[in-house]
Image (cartoon, rainbow, N blue to C red; front, side, top):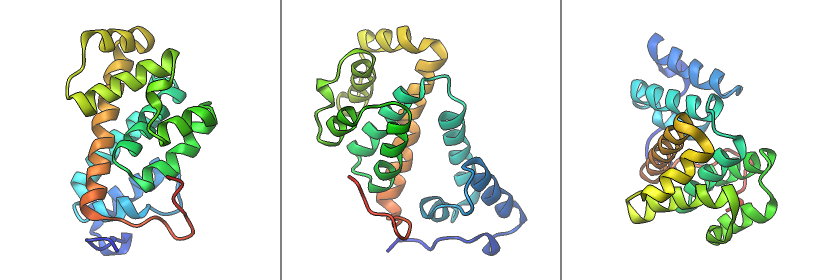
Length: 181
């Protein structure tokens, strides 16, 4: 059970309802998911955070396969059933192989090669080493360009925030969904 109530649209004032509608529309969803409805206990903060997520997910210059690789690495790092279950499907749809996805799931992403290895190293260093070497930055910048490498760094930060909020608030998976982590 979530540690805070899930906020429904009708419980919010006009400004909150506008934030709710933006979250729903940005994700092209009939309803706002539970994790975001838990965040809506602080509507303005949720709105700012989810706007960043929208920009990074839907308007990034990063190739979708590399963006989703970074996202599933973060989901795996934080053991997030919610993020993994949704984004592992998106990663496959973006062109990541079943083998790549499984290597991330089983903590063997270090075995990946090519551009995937560059993204893995970038994310791994930020999360585990709490540094980013010039070599890893330069390799990612070569693939992604200046804007893309900034978006990769922000993607790491955004999904850390989302996953840490999930740890704190404990939103449940949507009904009928089963974890694939």
